[in-house]
Image 1 (cartoon, rainbow, N blue to C red):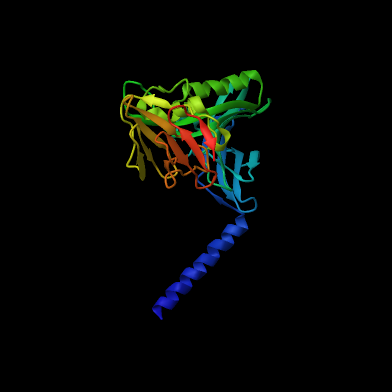
Image 2 (image 1 turned 90 degrees about the vertical axis):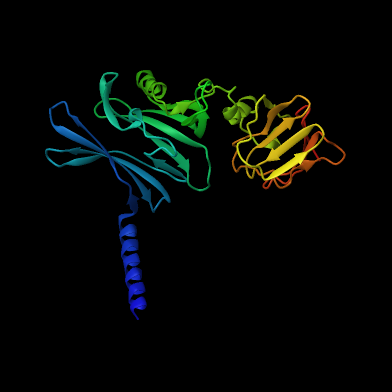
Amino acid sequence: MPMMKKRSRFFLLGLILLFLFLEKGALSSQPYRCSYTAEDGQRMELVLRDSFSVVNFGRLLTIYRRNLETGDSVLLFSRDSLHRSYSLSFHDLPKEKKMVPRVIERCGGRYLVFGMERRRTDVTLLNSEIHLLAIPLGKGGLAELILEGRPMVLVMDSLRSQTENRFFVGRKFVLAGDSCLVSSLSDCVSDSKLFASYADVPLGHVRNYVAAWERVNGISALSDMERVNFVYYSQPFFPMKPVRTVESENFKVVAFPYGDLLAYDKRKKCYFVVWASEMLPREDYSSALAWKKGSSNELHLQGFYDRTVRYLNLETGELTVE
């Protein structure tokens, strides 16, 4: 009997929480706040809230401007999403001061500047976007700079092996704004230690082998490629214990589930990257990895999603379809 009463209380509590959830239409996270003094001397506060929207099955970003002396507040900015979520906290990245919401004076006006992440909600993807916005607090137009990429763990110093979290930028473009404001937002990117591109990363460092492979091959599915360009290293770099290994008199190849294919060339006595794409859904060649019948240099590749049988020549990088 006591157990039944306890279950009833939990059930009732669940109904109350569900009612409050549906009544509000959103689940709100902890808001970000920043204060400033208006031109007339009144103290103002900007409240940025990142909430889950029940109606849109995504996230809702709202920014209110509140007069701390009168208590009045007005909606300054709002943006919701469909199959995309907006978050003021960057996924797997440390929060950096230059990305925290703040009020600055630039280009003849006063602006709220902040960054937010935009990620898919309908499927799970590594790739995302960082939006840097400058919202006018008076006259002027909005400026928005978008960085497309994904979080990566990279070595940023060629002489050290210590890895750091970075948002690896594949593409940068301007959505809106005049040249002055866009330049200011670009300076935030340059000054921040959150972002990286091929120019910033020592690709010769063995621990950056994924970025090095993508630099010469791009980020694409195997079905879009006719040839793979291998990246060679003199020192070992197998990052973990593989789930499958195939070996011939010339090569040893190891595979990781939904991950990389790495190899060792016995004649050249060097290691090389066969496959290290971050293309999602990430393909899994580990279980089907084998040698082509009658060959010791061609790999039999068949993915979990892409069931087409392909052969990859480890001498030339040439791909052929069965």
